[in-house]
Length: 425
Ligand SMILES: CC(=O)SCCNC(=O)CCNC(=O)[C@H](O)C(C)(C)COP(=O)(O)OP(=O)(O)OC[C@H]1O[C@@H](n2cnc3c(N)ncnc32)[C@H](O)[C@@H]1OP(=O)(O)O
Image (tube, rainbow, N blue to C red):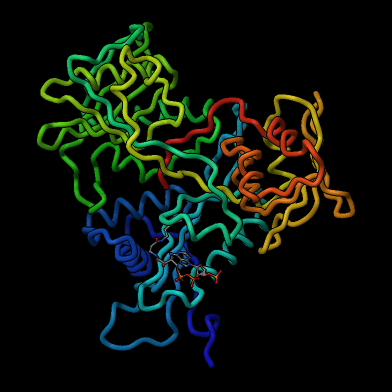
């Protein structure tokens, strides 16, 4: 009987860039099929392929050893997978290289035969061998990735702000806003984002392709999006410290924010005030707001801001508990012994975390008596401090062997600020 190993040829390759070769073209068109978006145009194939190359992405495709005619071209893989390295802010401004996984699709006629499992396990093994302590992804469905050791670690909210005559801030933000052509964000946007990324716990650095949507250069269907508008926020010294890109659409007209990035809290409020001032509109919506959105506290009438949904954004997978736990900052001294179970083995073992004024030290000691036992995905969820160990204990996902251990874990892993990020990938 044929197996997953001998039925498919798994190929890993670098995208071709400007001269889009058949392998890259086939992979990209297969990915559009997997995510139900329109086929790329020739121009957008070039742009997307260049972006993937710039980001150092490795593409993985699964090609059946035998295929029928007619069927999709041989260069179209039946499964796609990509990975690349970007930094993750683990707190206190510490940026740690993370192995990002994206573009996971399997053709319906080849699903549930183990292709995702094979591509994921092989890819994580390569990442661990390359020295990555942390892998990350964003998930289309919440039930797929725990089995591979990923846990939800950061969340965002969809919000709706009424901007009719009742809109008023309690305190006037300083600085000013100016409208710009959205394409100018190609240069300005990454500079503002870099300031945000360096200071925001949970932030993942951005890949090049993300700016296509923010600037309107290429929409999800591969065409120019001429409805995208943008504005900058300037601080009182005239330095750009925030921007927003958005569309005005619908009946009645409403402002839909595509991206809002601020280097500090004042700039964020200034941008909200700008959005609220757009005439002929009485509503602003955004689906990547913070859980702890300060706007709610800045409004004279907090009820103008409605949370319409909350979604998991970042899923983390700890590949090396020693390196990962030593990389993040801790606000108070203490120690805990954690037994970690991991079906894939990367994080398995019993680890002693000791935090002193000199920093964190982690050792593996499988003979030690554990204070708590948890699975690798749970470690991913609590690692940044975005999920509370007490809550995971209450949910039966952390077993406390010593009274008070969950509180110790909570105190040790608590984040220096609310965990948040604004990088779809
Ligand atoms: C990081 C990202 O890119 S997120 C985007 C993920 N992709 C999509 O949502 C696109 C549409 N979906 C697909 O293309 C496919 O259904 C995939 C990629 C989700 C799954 O691919 P498959 O090759 O069918 O998965 P595979 O057969 O390897 O299954 C592996 C395991 O995951 C489970 N699984 C697969 N898909 C799902 C799902 N949608 N929900 C819950 N469990 C799932 C399987 O039951 C199997 O479990 P087990 O090994 O523990 O028994």
